[in-house]
Length: 309
View: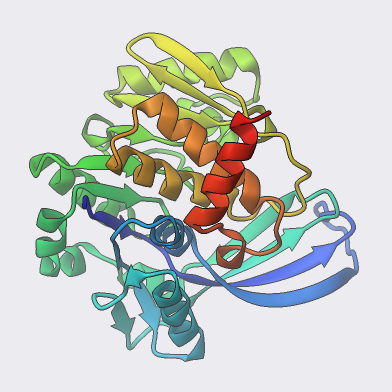
């Protein structure tokens, strides 16, 4: 059993359903308000745990009801939460998520206790780095902690998966050569590459720019268009599974967790992308974040349905 270590954010999501996402200066009326466990790190850990892989998480929550609910949600997904930091100075992170009737979303994150997932804390838990085989990270914790984690992962010859979300204006120095799989969506890729507009040509050029910076593999998630894998000067597309999306909130997080699980089970990259696409296709047909992420039985059944046409 190859253990997965997820290092990242834990947020309480405040989801507001509305007809359309407002533009600057516009006021719109919401039609629903729900609080659910989320955070990119916690969502990705949840996906890996639900899909049957031994998963442990490093991250920070506040000493409050929201933090306790987040911890409980992870434990229900079979994630080891014993090493979470309980912040005494910051409340649990919060994300405000607007979801329109087409399933599109816009998200604002208050980091809160996630700022306490720092380098010192990671060093205190170095045994988890040594015990795992796969490390998953995102960008909702301090950037120097992300840089330290990917560097430490490389030193220990672990497989490092970095989901660069939210994408920074500039990635910390030295990160790219230490990443095995970089998994941006098309918007994040464009920002990292320094372009302004999302076009097929900019996606292609941007991905090659990132591989030239040292990333071994760039997996660009393209929503209902699937995923494009850039490596060794080549590109390969894996089509998405066609479904009617109602909420895309945790789709990318599910993809990352599922991709790591598939690799840990010995699937090659193309097989792992297909597996992750199927898992995320189920997620977008459900409302919410962690509660929308499927278990292994659901993914295996959908896999058989897809294979059977």
